[in-house]
Length: 368
Ligand code: G6P
Image (cartoon, rainbow, N blue to C red; front, side, top):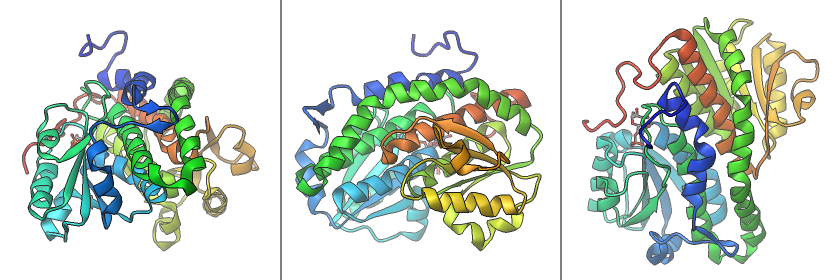
């Protein structure tokens, strides 16, 4: 049943709309009595709490999910987190130590670069944790411990529901590692209640489908699309741009808004469409100022903001606005990626490309 499209035209579309359910299964039985229970990590939590740093390792969308998790893992655990694209870690033979916790993120659990990086980290004596959707995969067998994301089988080459479930699995991991800290108890409770309400918020944001189709039709002939994000939503910018690139075959780049003045600003004119993610969090006023700077250079803007914030992000109505429901700030990337997944999907269909099998790409890259 799971491998059928049902009433949907494409697997990617089905998997996008399935997210309220896939997120529910990711969390099922794991949020207990105001805490988090992750059977696959339990025995190793003490070692992880004592480690010198957490190193996140992955490729493609899985790397982006880890990047989305980085801020809250740092916040809830107090452990420094560094990021590694698997192939780059191998190219550099970057330092990995016995005192490190290396967290490998992979939907398939079979990506060659990620598995080679795992062998490398094992040789260097790090504690190796796997975050994967595939029970029995090489990644889940070779790591010391881990979390299955339980998102259900993902068929579309462009990863959608696995991305959001990976973020939620890593949120639960961060809550479990940080659960011995009294000072962050209130924050942890707020995140747990945010997790509980996440599936219904995702159902809410999926109602933007028609609006995103309409936005896609206005972008269909664009040659390029930029996406600006920062803080919790830097990863959303990278992942949104990756979706557009890989399925709609349109050049697209995700950019750190804080770097705008150091190069990207030169590209801004009235033709290049730019999506700015400006939902409510500690970076909100900085994003308001980014929007002002882009508008003063006649930028063609689409701003994603929290419900009710349209006039706060775009006072004179000179940009298009996408309003999304708000959740706990660190979980907002789970909501914010969904309109961008829908946009990439509709752009692909409207441009007449293959949604589930984009040219030149494979679901799982098992060679180096
Ligand atoms: C391929 C797929 C991507 C995926 C990446 C990592 O490039 O096309 O969608 O994000 O591999 O795959 P993994 O299974 O390790 O998450």
